[in-house]
Length: 263
Image 1 (cartoon, helix red, strand yellow):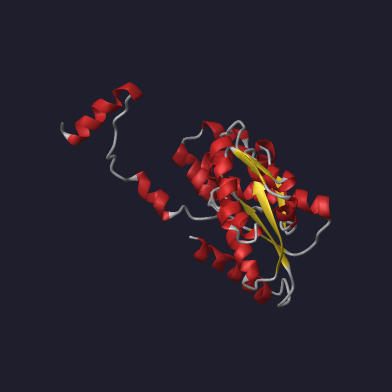
Image 2: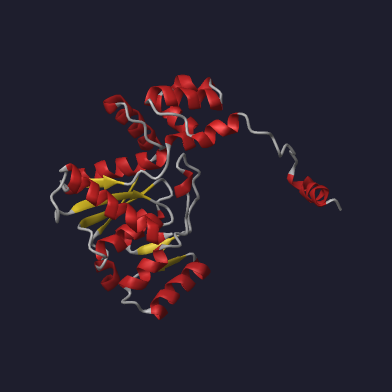
């Protein structure tokens, strides 16, 4: 999965050069909304394959285990799990981070294994000061649910562009990064999902009046205000045959399974 994701950043940089946003060789920053650390790890690999990336900005939602890791050097999953409007980032064990730990440990498999063993047994591990120094190119930030909703609304009001909840997390963290660092490098914000995938959360962020609409009414309204066609995958659902209509309590699940299996 990482291999095609690396291409995102090569392609994005080429697009920026071709559009005149940067000159070939100029450095850029990259912001990635992530919980599992995969997409931003791909950007890290792209950087060391030659893409002129300056800093890698890791954007978290309220499950900010990665933010805390980059601030303190300790990875601790022993915390409350938060259900957010950016569910693809609702993760407390970032499996791809293990690959970065291996690299900053000097490709030492034993150190890497010890960290992962501690995570499994104690729910946390801490890297050494020497390892933490190798994370200087990373910046961790996070966005609250309120900030995420406010970013969706403010960006739409500013330019008519509708983003999904995950992209809103990234855009919010980018603003915080610039305010904190003053870094003015041109920046790529990875938009990792369509707003049509999280229509209700997006539309509720734009205006409370949408809360009474049905799901398909929201889809049509999003299409209208964003001036974007409804994706075919969603259109097909409108007329799709209902194949599964069983509803049961958890205690009845064995009976339902047996019915499926005709036993």
